[in-house]
Image (tube, rainbow, N blue to C red):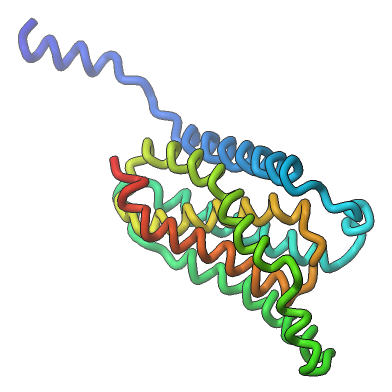
Length: 213
């Protein structure tokens, strides 16, 4: 077979690439890892006993709304950053919007209390568990999404890794919320945010290794 015949052979067998295939795989990894992390949380820590009552409280919806918004923003940025050649965007800065709203609500909560009560409110008895559990539960989405993103051949590896960590941290926090009894803005704005930030920093530091292709 000469060169012209080879070119003709290859050109007649080119299949169209589905541009949404990667998005579907990412969505499947996100929802699958959320379900898996929540199941692990319930099997190891348990389900909060007042879950039915909590569904009717504004504090619980504020917490879930904050975490869901963070994950949604991070997924949007990750979807763009995962494609080869795409430059960095300002997605990480957009996360400051829901975080700022939670911190504002936390400030309102603290302002309604006397300064002598602040320490007790901030240092809730399970804050150590929160900071440890969120990164551990984030391991499931971190592994699954890393496997997916390696096929997308991203080029901005530290930035893409940070977004990967932010998504994984948010999913881990959502899973932990099925157990956690504290829905106050102060607790969410301090300890949930800390747990997510730890996973985000880990993703930024390990991105060049995890996402290398």
